[in-house]
Length: 129
Image 1 (cartoon, one colour):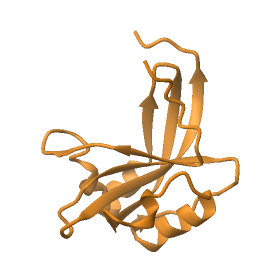
Image 2: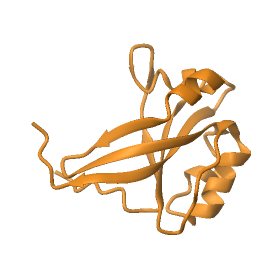
Image 3: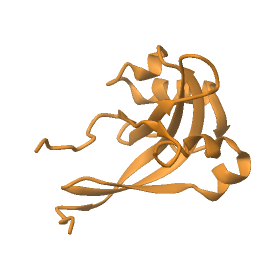
Image 4: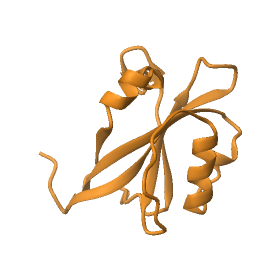
């Protein structure tokens, strides 16, 4: 099994836009109330538990420079903010890691929903049971 550590400053996790599962619900967070009431998420790998502190949801082209990772995090976050449908200010540092959940969007042809948050390691070396 591959070692999934999300060690780059900017990381992208791709999922299908399905009606009942995967990333099909991401578009709901474009609504301000839904976005504000769902700030945190969880990401579990075989070796690490992460909290995701979501701060932006954007609609971008599938060919946007946001998909060119690894990259410099401050420029990446700035680009996310430029395209954000919803955005909350967050502290940004060079040592932080970020993740975007990306899926197809019905916004326009070739569009992608890009739900972005700060990746916060919670527990290492735990066992998924």
